[in-house]
Image 1 (cartoon, rainbow, N blue to C red):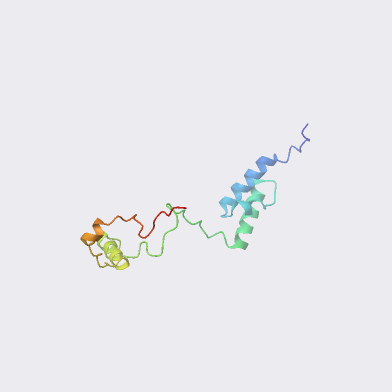
Image 2 (cartoon, helix red, strand yellow):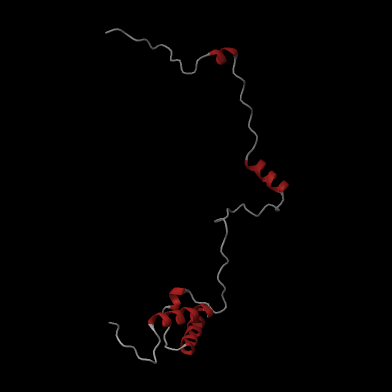
Length: 122
C-alpha cells in the first residue's frame, strides 16, 4: 500500500524530472540538478539559475563529444593535405639501408638444422 501524498506535491518521479529539466536548462549537470530545492517548476528554475550563477555554469556550454576517440598531438597539425601527411610520415620513418642479399651458401643452409648435436647411445 502506497502512502498517501499531499495533492499539492508532485509524485517523486515527476519532481525528479522537473529538477533535471530545470537544471539542464540552466547548464547544470545531472548530479548538480539532483540537489535543487523546490516543489514547483518556478522554484526549481529559480534555484537552478542561482546555483548555476554561483558555479559559473550559466555561460558554459558542454564540450562537443569527440567521435573516434582521443586524437594524438600530431593529428591535424600538418597542413591537412595528403602531401603534408606523406612528408610527416617520411620524417618519422626514415629510410633504412636495405639488408644484404644472402649468399648462395646461406640460401642452401637449413635454418632449423642444429650443428654438433648427435644422439648418443646409452
